[in-house]
Structures are given as structure tokens and as C-alpha cells.
Length: 279
Image (cartoon, rainbow, N blue to C red; front, side):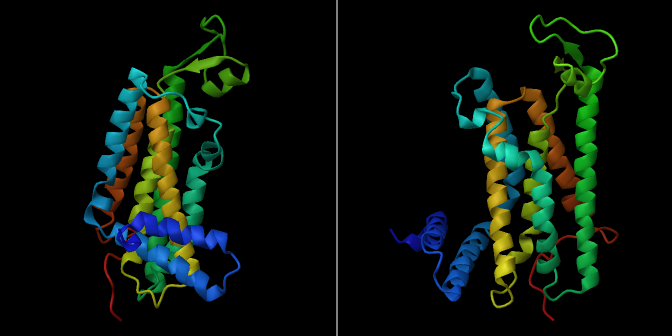
């Protein structure tokens, strides 16, 4: 079997070579990075890779919830919320998304486009941040107004001035309310936004691309892979069925209302360049 016929094998081979031989000359490193980027763009050019992503999240949410309820999946490193990916990536997932997308959109959207167009496109990050903040706030609010504070040992309700989850936990008690999964929401929403914003790389010629843009693109793909994996772990190990499904649907809805419904319209941040533009 030819290694070039297997995109994931080829990516792994190139990355492994780069890590094993970090002192290779710069031109070889750039060629290795370019090879990884070319493989990734070939993957994302497959129609189903992008169009099926929302359906994938729904399927994972349903299937993972069923596995959790049946207890067929045993505990693992990722069933502990203190795992490395959760602490240093998922907990600050929107920060990772913004830090990587801000320079990527600025550079990738500039190909054969004006600075005005780039500034307009950057407003999509403001819209996405507003959606993230609003949904996160709404989830916390719903959990506060539907929950109660309980003793950790006796499970007896604590009456008095404790009316929020934060105040309850501060006193060392347990809060139980309708907890829509913020993890399911942000991991699905962030992945869908990133995949949409990576589209310009499918049409930018290699002669225009620089090592900085290529590295950003690889980092964004790596983040999407982490988000999908942690979404799977969330579905299998945490939250109740309805909490995860609602969180997932909120993420998909946020993406749909912007990139599918609003952004194609004239008065909007607009979609990322969908095809190669000629000067």
C-alpha cells in the first residue's frame, strides 16, 4: 500500500519526521509543513467532511449518551474532569479559538481582497463571541433558577440566602439544577466556526502561503480534532442525555443562524472567501 494514498498516515509520518529531526534545514521544515497542509486541505475538500460535521455532533451526542446510560464504557483517564485536555484546552476553549482565528482570518482573507473586506470578516468573531457569552450566561442562569442547594452528605435541601450555584459551592454544598452542557455547546459551536473559517485555505495557492499561515492552519485542525475528541468524552462520561442534546443543538443553531442564514446576506460580516478570487 502506498503511503501517499493514506492522508492520515502521510500527516503522521511528516509530523513524526519533523519532531525526530528538528535541526533539519529551514527549507526542509517548510516543505514538511506544506505537505501536511496540502494533505489537510485535500481532506476538507471532500464535500462530506464539512457538510456532515453538524450531523456528526448530533450522532455522537445521542450515541455517547446511550453508552453512558447503559454503562458499557468503563472509566478512563478522560472520565476524570482534571485530565490535561480538559484543564488546559476545553476550560479555555473560546480563548484558544479566538487566539488562533484572529490572525488566521486576517491573513487568509486578505488574498486578492481589500483590508476593508478583512475588517468586515473579523466582525464575525465579535458575533461569535456574543453568541458564546449569551449562551453561556443563559445556561448558568437556567441552572440557578431551576436548582437547589443540598448538604453534601445527607442530601438535605439547604434553605436560606443561598440561591445560586456559586454561593452554594462556596459554602461546600452541592447544587443540583437543570445543567445544559456548556461543554457540548462550546465544543460543537467552536468546531463548526473554525471549519467554516478554514475554507479560504482550500483555494489559496501554495505560492502565496507563508509558513506562519500554514502553521496556523495546522494548529486550527489540531484544535478541531481535540474539540471533537473531548466532545465524544463529554457525551460518554458526563451530563444527562437532555443536557448534552440541548447544548449540542444550541451550538449547531448558533452556527446555522450565522453562517447558513445571516452571513450570505449583504448586511452581515459575510462568509469567508468560498473560491479563488482573480485579481
